[in-house]
Amino acid sequence: MVTELIDKKRSLAAQEEIVRKLQRELEAAQKVTLANRMLVSRLQSKTKLAKERIGDKQLAASNFEEELLRAKSIISAVKRKMHIAGDAGSGRNSPQVESSASVSNENQKFSITSSTAQEIKNSLDVKLNQLSSLTKLENREKRKLEGASESSSEETVSIRYC
Image 1 (cartoon, helix red, strand yellow):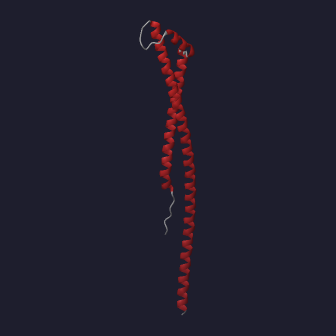
Image 2 (cartoon, one colour; image 1 turned 90 degrees about the horizontal axis):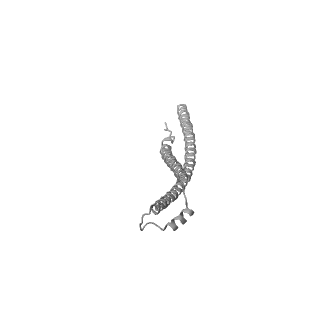
């Protein structure tokens, strides 16, 4: 009977040790879960911020494209007016040529010197460069965003239970 009691005590001690080990593993798993939740939360906030930045950059790019189209149409109109004025001045008779009175009237409304044309061209070049850089930044942000979502699954911490 004494040996049975000793065996039961040993068995109880072994069971208590197993319980303590499982409690430590549970605490470790809870810590890992908390760390993973914090990581997911951080990644979600970074994703939201990146999406907002991309949206802002897309809006800016769209605005630049609209300005570029407007500027191109202005330049095209100026070239047509200059071409028409040149043809009218050379004495050519063409069905496309307006009367010289209407051309001079139009030129008074809308006259562009070569320096103004150069300024418009320089402005367009600057806007194209800005649009190009914004597009590059947008692509970079998209790649970062895609990389962050792929790496989040790799960064998830896991514990192997012994």
